Length: 393
Image (cartoon, rainbow, N blue to C red; front, side, top):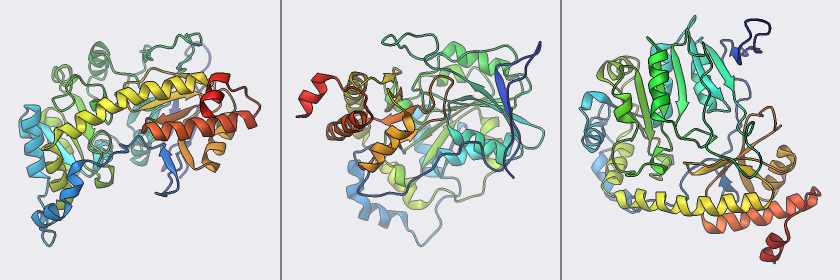
């Protein structure tokens, strides 16, 4: 069944959000591309570096005893993560990627007659999981550059319109936000958790390591979340840890929330090999620290190169940049794809038909991207600044 979308109400009771009716698929579901060695993937926000632990695969396979089932709930990894975070084990959950945990939230707290909420642009699967359970989704469309003149962009702050969280069972929000890259202030977390009353605030921290002062330690927002009984944080090994192919995720919440989630899961979703490799990765935090440092350096390079070519970008605390291109976004995306480079297309906003999200890559990835951008922009008749043309030659 296709989902239905109702626009914002008009008249005296007008609201700034829209309601998406129950259905199997969210509107504007993204297109995913299979792995292709000829493509430069700047659309997935993954780590271009492989952790040193992959060199130990043979040893880890033997240790995993693949002829047997692993732990039903990822017990060994759960214990290691709890010790690392300084939390009781019953406040930690692990799964087959953080997406499995987000899906479990939808099954545990949503269904027909219930409502989830999220901001748009946002992570499409948040809506997908809710709609698939027969819930409706309240979407608040935001305009990232609405109040900021070109050249003076700051971190985006999400609005709190009156009534937005009324009758909402789950608020999904990523922090740093995907795709805008902005952090979640502690005071806003408190407001949302309080406003939800009997609902749950799900903070999707897939990119949190990139903005933590101590990326290998407990999350900086977790102490704020612990002051409430309804905040669930999710993490993943897919991004900063460089293990996207494993599909390992984990989460932190008060024990009653974790207990409810566990009742809605099937056992053995985390396979033995993935658990062993994740445990080995935890023993080498230096790779994570180096990845975070590298992203911070190359993010500045990428942002500077995009701005020189007329893009508007938001400051980001993650390993990607949200940007408005200086020309038609779809044509620009197609031109890059034709040159073997994929970036992510984002849901349109009021002021831009097609924003783009670009993953921070290696230095050589950015050089290749900039060269392709110059070719596409020149072909579209968009002036390319002389300094970039000179450097390119």
